[in-house]
Amino acid sequence: MREDEFMVTRHLDHLVARGNTSDVYLWGEDAVVKVLRPEIPHEWAMREATTTRMVHTAGLPAPAVLDTTTIEDRPGIIFERIPGVSMWEQMLANPREIPELATLLARLQAEVSATPAPIGMPALIDRLRENVAAAGVLSHAEREAALDELANQKTGNTLCHFDVHPNNVLMGPDGPIVIDWFDAAAGDPGADVVRASVLMRHDAALGHLPCANPAIIDQVHDRYLATVVQIRDLDPGELPRWERTVLASRLAEPTPEPVKRATYDTWVALGNSKASRLTESLKSMDPGHPLRTDLS
Ligand SMILES: Nc1ncnc2c1ncn2[C@@H]1O[C@H](COP(=O)(O)OP(=O)(O)OP(=O)(O)O)[C@@H](O)[C@H]1O
Ligand SMILES: [Mg+2]
Image 1 (cartoon, helix red, strand yellow):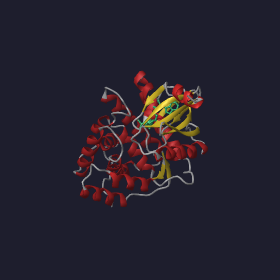
Image 2 (cartoon, helix red, strand yellow):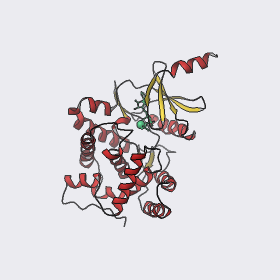
Image 3 (tube, rainbow, N blue to C red):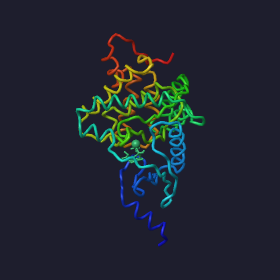
Image 4 (cartoon, helix red, strand yellow):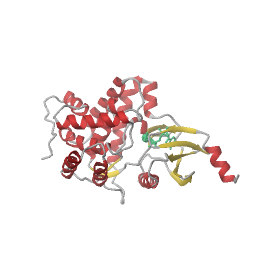
């Protein structure tokens, strides 16, 4: 056995976490390697390495990318290791800290939005179009309707993480660090907020927010959204316009079957003017405010 093969075997003994799309292993003392699952397209690793390098260079709290590699035909990214639990683990261990942590989550996202999008960042609207076009759960007619809706959305040029939830923040010794920049893009900041809301719905959080208690996820969602409304220069009444597009795009992602079903059901229900967690939550904050769901 060659020495580098021995090193790989040794390092990959220490599984740090299993995500939806990857396995993360310790890599020496101060690094981790994020190895894509065999079924995930190989080019996804380079995409995440590139966007993470861009935002780290821009000064955002993101892990440094140390290298890229290939292990048993699976591409991997070597990141600086952030020692510490995730914000989600901290919330579950200390429920009394949920309000403060959910507020921090909204503030971290605001920091991302306030950073000029690095040159070369992909356009969110293009990513959304690719995803909606690939959403196999939708019928041909539904997909066409979703693409028509997308054509009326704002393009924007604000930096979006587009996967904001408490399991994508690590509570490092020098402060919180945002990880998982695979979806980062330049687009409309409202889309990034709506995406976070969709990810923090208790019926569609299986996998990325493991938890037996839906009330906890609802509490995080509502506190996050209330902070957004308070601190961001965004019209809350405009946010629901993004919801169906964000849901349709999510249907193209590799998520567990119950998440896919819940996402599709919500997409259909919104088409029939039913309320969602986002609209309920916004209404409870400002019952008199009209919410826009049309795209005119
Ligand atoms: N730089 C890092 N330092 C320490 N731990 C890390 C680091 N990056 C990732 N991890 C660990 O690996 C887990 C999964 O990472 P990440 O969210 O990037 O993977 P993923 O497969 O994209 O996950 P998902 O698709 O479920 O969101 C994290 O929750 C964390 O526990
Ligand atoms: Mg993640």
